[in-house]
Length: 485
Image 1: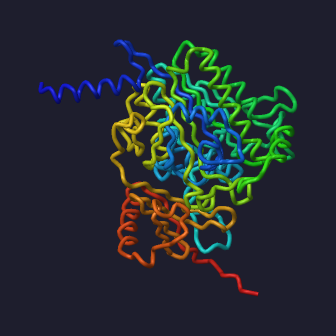
Image 2: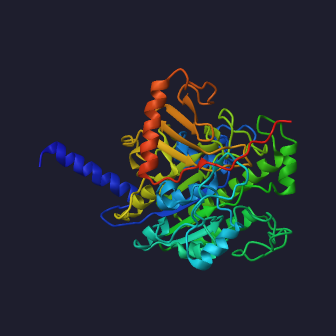
Image 3: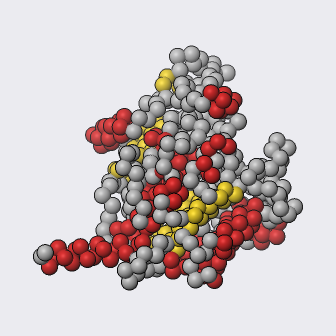
């Protein structure tokens, strides 16, 4: 073997050993902690720019790992992103392209008959008919815990699931433990017994102490799981219900933010919710350190979509808009990955990455093989984490063939290729074009000035939609425009 080939092979072996935790020829499978916060905006933690929210524990995690400034959620709303994290696949492939409306009467009928929901949504008098969303993550999909099970991992889900009714709860998708995961997209309330007038509580989280704050309860459960499984490899999916509505927080913490100088971010209740999540991260990190697990644990911190700016929970500036919208405020999210011995402390990566990349990255770390009988869209982030290369991908896609927030958001698709981003609005067949590198706030639409670029990106998008089997909205033949008064 030539010297260069030998050195390249050796370097590759060492890189693999570094991520999987192989030392001195002995396998040491790293633990994985994935913290997913619901509706957390790109600048909702101080290490990503917030001057109002206080997140010292997340900041320390960031200082010890890699901050991804160009990370994206697979969708601007929650369920599709969660399906993509679990499977490593675009939401168009899983069929979950909208948040799952668990109260939809079609769900009960579909479960009874063991059939998929097809056709179009009964959307009333709207210009477009929107395709029916898949109401659960199919068991045929292969999830992160199912991949890790072959490597001897014990997996625990805590918090929000929102990927289907009871027959599709986390324990049916590879998790050994399910604490709080159900069909709910938000908690009935954030204080024990977690109930409101319509819902008696969270069916998989029995009340424990009246008035206990939900994020604190989730934190307790996470710490307990880590302690009980410290002697074996584990995967902890800490999927907080926070910071999703209803906006509720501990009163003392709210008062603290009421007294604090406001910035563009100024909601004291939301700020208190963010701090509670930060405290939960701190407890997990402290427990890992106490048990001498910190050096052999990968910790990932992420959000499922942009911050909820539509009802002024937060402000995603300098990004445009927020949750639900195709602009950067809706899909760009904070991502931190910390892996001692692999990530350089305080490192920053600006290459675009996306939710699907988490599965292959975790699988590689654990030494688990990816499924060979399906397309995995995500890429292993190892070259970025080690700062030894880039990802062989220039283009990312999004598809949201639905209405959201009434009709404030209309059906759309997005393609980002290099620095260029094209949005296709289906209702009026209109396009918007932005150069994200030069215009992160998407203030200048270049579509009219650059028709050739629009045409090229439109072609890429059309090919991808067809290849992934994306369900499309269509014109509503019965739509009757309301007369202007």
